[in-house]
Length: 201
Image (cartoon, rainbow, N blue to C red; front, side, top):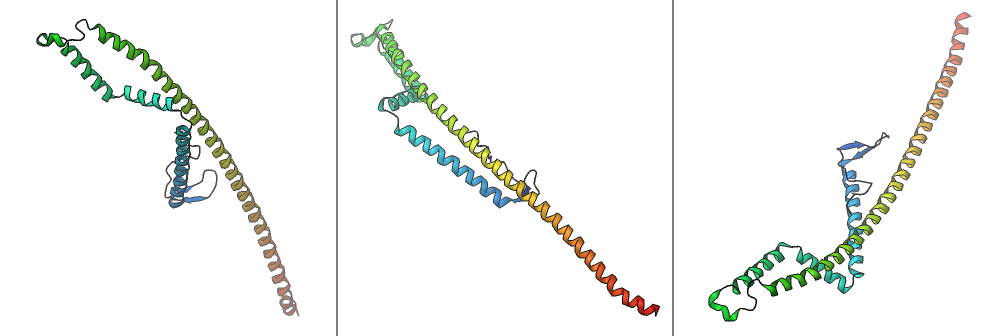
């Protein structure tokens, strides 16, 4: 599952600003978020592996092992060495009484035909199992991304509400401050009137 989820683990600056909002995110919190996302993905993958192993039959696991062995350099090396030894053993003239498959190696061709006939469907079985697992993982990735997108939408909605409340509070504070200024101006005007009356008298 490796689309990385919609939350993502992109690197953050030392004091990143959430896009669209005047809200800073420290490097420590960014690393904490990355760690939580990684742990969540690992837990999902471990559960998928556990479920895949639990639901696998013996024949399915055997097919996987045979396909894994048949597609390795180890198998190619040992199998090539066995073929060379077979042909050399049955070609040396001084051990002719011990030959069991002289050229043109009819028995060897028969064995190779049997091997190919059985190996091909076994590999196809393993590929079908792997395709089913890949499909399962892709569905899980889609579900994770969909859930992450919903959570991101919820967070953005919450941030928008906070931002709107901040704007309303700022406007209310500005109005109250203006009222206080007007009240102070009115008080100063009332205090200045007796002084003006005294000067006139």
